[in-house]
Amino acid sequence: MQQKKTNPIIQWWLTPKFPLIHLGDKTSFIKKWLIHPIKRRIARWYLKYLQSHGGIKVIAITGSAGKTTTKEMLAAILKLEGKTIYSKENIDPIYNIPTTILRTPIGTKYLILEMGVEYPGEMDFYLWLAKPDIGVITNIFPTHLEFLGNVEGVLKEKSKLVLSLSKEDTAVLNSGDSQLKEIASKLKANIQWFESNKDQLTEDAFAAATVADSLNVPKNKIFEGLKQYQKPKHRLSIIKLKTGTVILDDSYNSNPQALSKTLKFFIHIAGKHNKIAVLGDMKELGKLEESFHREVGREISKMNFQAVIGVGSAIKFLIDEINRSNNYTKTYFVAKQEDVLPVISPYLQDDNYVLIKGSRSIALDKLVDALV
Image (cartoon, rainbow, N blue to C red; front, side, top):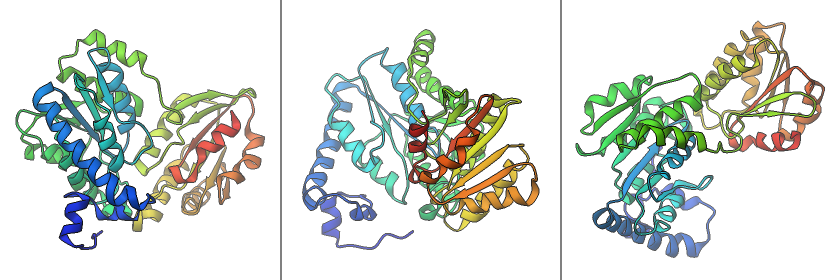
């Protein structure tokens, strides 16, 4: 996706590398053209000061899934070693990274920055703002394809993080990701591989532990930090309703590989119980939207779900694939999450397990909140 060319003076004022597509963000004129450009410059130079005079270690985390959980787990560990500042949730990194840097007091030992990528050029901007000592890539999946084109585009943008590292720095990578193995030979940094796992939470814990180990954090503190970690809402949370129904709430977001992993985890914990799924659209897949929904639908058709409720528009392709090859699973298709409650209510019985997952814009987290 090409960004429109603009006057070089405007680009300079907005700050070099700033992705111009964000000019369309719903921020006020004063913030967009005055406050944010100044804030970015102050944040950049302040972090340079902290790194040259305070010895702060900067850890940057990107990837297609597990970024936030890895960040939260790592923060829980590093807090036991010293003052740790890290990105807050649900704020676009374009604005979150400068804000996080500016709330970092002198004397902070660790700064953890989540570098989520949606558009081409965003990683260049993040790296203009902050030079990491450690770069983490959790995985490379087909996400934001509407803007990044394909998996190769995702890899190209996210891998800029570790390609920017020097030989004194450390890259922490997923050993089970074939794309990351392919770029390893291009890196100057010391590479630390963490173990892949079918359970996303376990994999995220491996990533966080590997970062901590590279910082020479004692193993007992790593275990203690992971034990103290508080799981964010709507991420692989197991909830038991008064009816006896068990819900696996993974409604925060969705993409094809993440959904596939969550399905396998759900099948494992549900065992022989009745299995129901409420699945929302997987967004920003561009021209591959239909094929990815159909692919996951074929996977689900082999899993003996009692019922699958699709929410959105593209999810119809997933439902279609289930109906095509499975006579056991009852399927439903609704336009929005507000329509799910009357459909799912008969299934909220003892002995039933329900998976809820979809892209954030489908708002299935509101369904979870209504059920609890």
